[in-house]
Image (cartoon, rainbow, N blue to C red; front, side):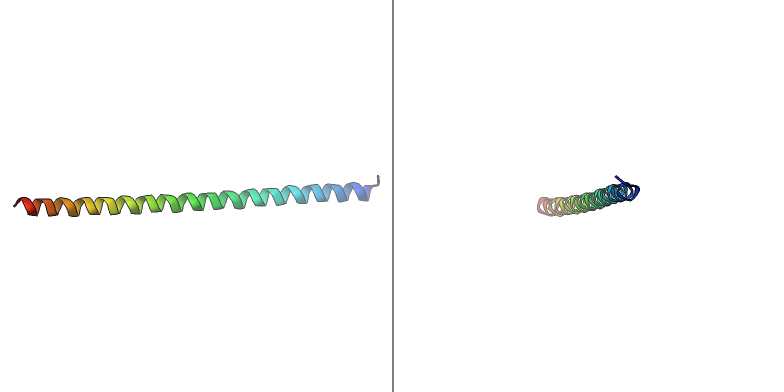
Length: 65
C-alpha cells in the first residue's frame, strides 16, 4: 500500500469521525430542545392548575357568604 492510499484511508476515517461527531451534537441539541419544550408545557399546566384552583376557591367562598 502506498502513501497515497494511507492518506486516503486516514482522510476517510477522519471524515467519518467528524460526521459522527456532528450527528451526535445535533442529536444532543435536539434532545435539549425537546426537554425545554416539555418543561415549558409542565410549567404552563401547573399555572393553569393553580388558576383553576384559585377560581374554584373564590367561587366556594362566594357560595359560603
